Image (cartoon, rainbow, N blue to C red):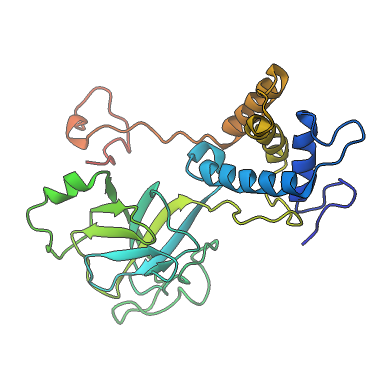
Length: 282
């Protein structure tokens, strides 16, 4: 892992202390021959960690989504977070997408790993139902029930068959994932897509492992955030540059899914039909 030397970024970016010192100088702390105190640095590190915790909850401020999986055990409830059925460093606040994979004789994905799969090679060339040939898993999207109030209206929650829906409750410290209907154990694999955790618990000597466009955003936004601690308002220049840097990240990270309509409203005889349009969420 590379760190910065004299403010020159390495492959992992600037150090936390580099960006904090630059942020403090934008509001006059440590500028013109003065030195920021240890208390100033300590407070700024706390502000940085709190700011990144806020950024973590905003899709457009997180540069990457991860796709993590775990195998169905015929349960109606699975826990997501540290030590849960899906073991992640922190519990996600929400899932962006979900799908169920019918393994179809294919090998189980490595639990908790986000690895590229090309679905080729010896692992997939295994017999299926006694027949020779490639074992190709089949993925089926899960429609997300956004509110527990809607999940509560399901009459037969214990229905066990092909999964079509799911609900995620961001309980703390472990989130709760409920598939419906409940699929059989062993032959299904759940995949949850959510925001990759940003860094947390940073210390002054830690590198900022984020894309280069984040360095500017961190410096200016942190300067605006800590200015009230010194009895001042952030200048219009600091505020404008912070907004500009955040807009750059927004432009880079924004991903807009295809607009969907209920399948029942798109019959094949519809004059606005095109091949593939019938594959819609209910």
